[in-house]
Image (tube, rainbow, N blue to C red; front, side, top):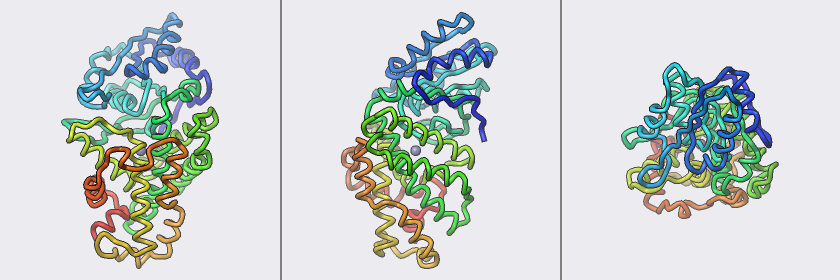
Length: 370
Ligand SMILES: [Zn+2]
């Protein structure tokens, strides 16, 4: 598991970056941001670093693509690679969203130059991830990369992030309900590897978010602190286990399916967590229908009979579709896939095919393959 040198989550965390870099001996830095995250945090970080006379700071502003989205694709990766000075650049600083982090963590991995994480919104649990989802030749795939060496999450910045980003982070956390269920299910029915500690860390992080959904929806300092802590802990659980099982299963596969369809159509990208939260409600309905009401897309999978007691008990911990939508509403995010532009045809197709996007033995896969 990666050892973070620093995890700072407080007001004014940005001011601690320069002393940390000097202590670490970093002198030639590249701040990586986009136009929005530069305004949110990049500019004040740049000024604070330039105020320290031993630090050389360059700025790499990642340009949006033709649909207006900043994406982690070949073009963005090369844009950053061009700025890296071999043998000179000794630190990369990701200032922004999950996407900016994915660009930086991949370049950090390939160049061996460590990177520092400055999240500008509580939008996703991937800040600490060791994998980078990248779009290469139009297809999104996760590639090996590295986690940051340190995280400076400044509550003054995070509480000012736009509401949809905050709600997306909450949606990414709610997805842990079905992810944790699927993980236990796949361990029981197909022998997939399991780690109790990673499951407990993730579950605790999830529960603390659910208990504070209103606070998170209000973007109060307490709500944002709780959400950011949960997102970091969920990321740490994945590092501990070494794979994404604790945080991602059928709800992420459905979200991924929608994302690929949007890429093919040339539509603007949707927020990751907004998709995951809504997909979690859909998966909850499919799972409760199957296990409690005997409604199946095809035949009843034999494992449901075989392990009925255990599966029923685990599913009882997954809230109903309507409760998941209510929690999403409290956090101020989209609650229905129609708000995301997902039509009936795409929903049906995604529920029937999403299990094919990853080699995982989820209940969705068992239902579709029965
Ligand atoms: Zn996620």
